[in-house]
Amino acid sequence: MEGRAFVTIRDLVDLRKEGRTLTLLPRQPVHSQLAGAHGSRLRGRGLDFRELRAYVPGDDVRDIDWKVTARMQRPHTRIYSEERNRPALLLVDQRINMFFGSQLNMKSVTAAHAAALIVWRVLAQGDQPGAIVFGDDNQIEIRPARSDLRAMSILRAIETLNQSLRANDGRESRPSQLNQILRRADRLATHDHHIVLVSDLDGMDDETHPLLNRLTQRNDVVVLLVNDPLERELPDAGRLVVSDGRHQLEIDTSNPSLRQKFSNTFKANMESGRQELQKRNVSMLPIGTEAPVAGQLNALLGLNPSARRRSA
Image (cartoon, rainbow, N blue to C red):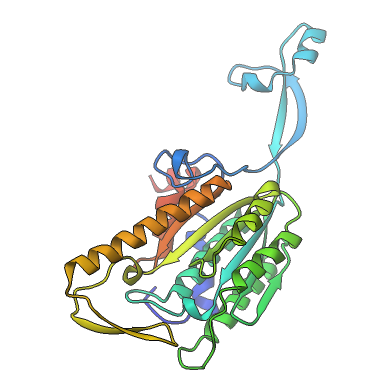
């Protein structure tokens, strides 16, 4: 998929096959960003009791029903089936601050691709995808449901807000929209949802933390932090004029100490943000605009084990 400033519904539908190779299950490889010190483990799916039967070698001893075993004088184990239809709620940022990119894609496009991959994965594993796709002054809400039609509704909402972005339309950035969307998610996701926020976190402040605390008390929350190489490191390009849309500043990027300070500041902010989110049991996965999203998510989350066996 070539680099671009906008997405189409066809782009997002074409990601279905790649989305099926992702895993949102709780057991992640050692190198995964969701393992160990890198972030909290997801709760994973629940289990529904299916039957009680005599123990056979290979059964998990933790599932032995000791009361029945004592009564029957023979080991018995409880058999469970994986719970299906768990709702997932994607919060997809398509604000004007996301309309920026220096290499392969705009941040808004990267967010759209990441959201589409998650939608297709959620649907493939038998769960219910839903979403709040938000811009600076509007949002489209799709309640979770397990169907291709619901997935397509989410993708169309992403396409609609993505294609409405324009650098020169006079639109003002609304950082406060981030917390507003989290408040709305808190009302929608009553319990046991997977909540995936796909954003650059513009607008994150002291109010954001208690909102995340409320969400993580009843749900699993993951943040896909979208970022661009120019936000991580300044190029050596001489004197440049930079602007946030309202103010301009001239900087000398040929100054090595300035570039180093810029890079160190980004890394410090990233680590500080990761630690703050980790305290709230929120996993943060950085997604860059310079490479296809599917490969990045596979590296961070790990391939679905069955998909790995098929590709071996």
